Image 1: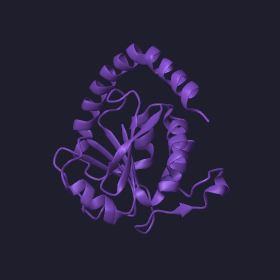
Image 2 (image 1 turned 180 degrees about the vertical axis):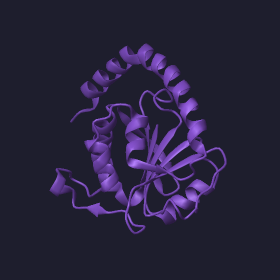
Image 3 (image 1 turned 30 degrees about the vertical axis):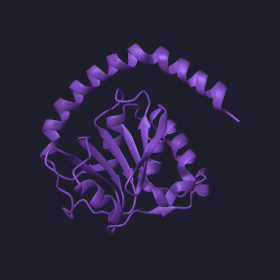
Length: 189
């Protein structure tokens, strides 16, 4: 899974990484930038939800990024003021999800009111407070699918992906534990 954060939120990178860990119970690491976004990848790379991307930013940054055709993930979850009914984004072979919002805007609230050190959206609060443990179920409980025709294809593909991902995660759990211990021991200040 990749998480893209608009560069305007540069000061929030560490806070967002902690947020992602709290929500999904898996580590994310910075892997660089793409256009107007910082890119974070779930670790271990390419083995946990490899076909999912969560992107946070202004619609005037997200739209050109998605339309350039270089997004490898099939399931794209968007936190932005884009309206699911606007049909701004239509990418063959991709299932695009939008956060819930009212009046075509995403509500951003003062994070300190909710115990966060960054301003937070309704969608992020809903992800954080969700009791669901499966990443796909959690995301689908918060986001709306823009094109319902993706639903049938998505259900069977996701189930097969989960089966293969589970085996991969099981086989590298020891490596992950050792990596985290090494990282914590050598890079904490």
